[in-house]
Each structure stands twice: as C-alpha cells, then as structure tokens.
Image 1 (cartoon, rainbow, N blue to C red):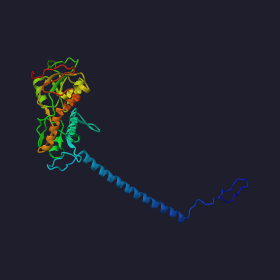
Image 2 (cartoon, rainbow, N blue to C red):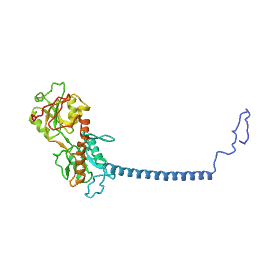
Image 3 (spheres, one colour):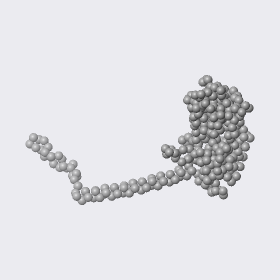
Length: 341
C-alpha cells in the first residue's frame, strides 16, 4: 500500500489510506467487461439449448424403445405370425389379471400358467416373453383388462404367437386354434368352517348370500339349486372368495383350482361342501395355420406330463392335480359331487 496519512487537529485520521490500484474502472474497461459477460452468456445459452435438445431426443428414443419392449413386433416368419421375438422367445399375449393362473406384478409375471409356460419354453428350448392384452377405456376412462377375445385377436393379428389368459376350450374365438388342455376345473361350492353352513342343505334357505365368479355354468347351477339365494357376481373368482372369507357371504362358488390355491396360501378355514362337475378345460391358443408352434406346445405339454413335472407344478400350486368330479375339504375329507358320483 502507498499513500499518505493526514490528521485532523484532534489527532484522528482525516482520510483512509489510498490503495495502489484504485477500485474504479475506466469507461473502456467497463465496456470490455460487459462485452465479455455478454459473450459468456450467449455461449452458456447455446450450450443449454444443445443439452435440452439432446435430452428431448433421448426421451423420444426411450419412449419408442419402451413401446417396442412392451408390444413385441412381428419377426417376419413365413406365415406372417409373430411367434417369437428377436431372440427366439415365444411371445405370449395375456391379460395377466386372473389370480392364481396369470397376473402381473410391478416387475414380473406370476401364476400357475406362467410357470407352466416357462417349463414349456425350457422343454422346447425357447424363452417366454409376455405382452399385455388390454381392452378399451371404460366410461370412467379406466383401461380394463383384456378378455379372452382380446387376447385371441392379438394372436390372430400376429402381434403374439400364443395366447394364455384363462382361455377355455368352450370360448368362441375367431382366427385361432386351441392347444391340448393344460388344466381342468370343476366348480366348488364353498362355506367357512364353524359358521353352521356345513352342507348344501344349510345354504338353501332364504337370506343366504352367495358370492360367485362370473360364469354361465355357475349361474345356471345356482338358479336351479339355490333359488332363494341372494347372488353377488364377481369378474374375479378371488373376489368371491374374499367375500366368503370376510363373512359378507355365507357361500361362494369358484373354480376348484382357484379355491385350492386360496386355501393353501390365505384362508385355511374354507371348505368345499359340493362339487359342480363341469367340462371346463383351460388351453392356450395359437393363430390358425401356425401348426409348428401348436405342435411345439402340445409336445412340450405331453413331455411335462410324462416326466412328472406337470404333477409337481400342480402340487406346488394347488396341493394336487385337479381331477374331474372331485373336490377336497381343507381337512382332506372327500365330498360327493352334484352328479351323485
């Protein structure tokens, strides 16, 4: 620091020390500084614009690839049917909303049918890739899960090789053919233990609420055998089971395999008091004319039955492989079916 010190008569400093480099700028220096700042701002603005454009382009690519992953495209086989993705995996269309057969979690697909398909893939040396089939929006703008006909349409159009969404051989579907059946399902008439409803006669009176899964065969049986009942119908059989478990209903009627699984993992106090024998067989569908994939699926199913893998899978999911005209109480007591057999 350089400068001089001056004092007032009272001995105090009159001025601060002068600095060697004054804190003022010439007009030219100020203009240079403003010009430099403006240039820097323009450069930063240009860099920011490039960054924004890059991010937008990346988002667009991600959206496109995401759609491609969810909706596999045709792999260009001779029949024009998308039997597999680029890696040779069988593309499966499913609504993935039918517990315990097939359903979607946030990260995966689970269910008896899902595991069976993966075993089929292993037997045939193919992977399995699921793609959802959804219906149009309803009146509240909610996207509803696809019905069997939606799944079949997806397969017939070549958007998937195989359809699996609780499809039965009795379903009237266009443009597809059925595989060999992979699961039989009679219907079980159920009550909750220790509630006083231990046989069919106990639920035939007035004031009985019966929760049923939506099925024409169940509706016809209830109309004939439980004419006084108040019937509550659910699209999902598991919802009917929940009504019974919570005792909002005194009885429920659902697929026997679905009941067996529910008892196994959620509610051991339900019992079957009657079996409604049915011709309900679940099967896969492939596009009409896709004989190669149909043969692959049927051969794998036969092999899984022959080596015991099918029975092991049924035991792990239902406790036993469901058979026609049978039902089992939770305690293991046999129940006579409605045909008298």
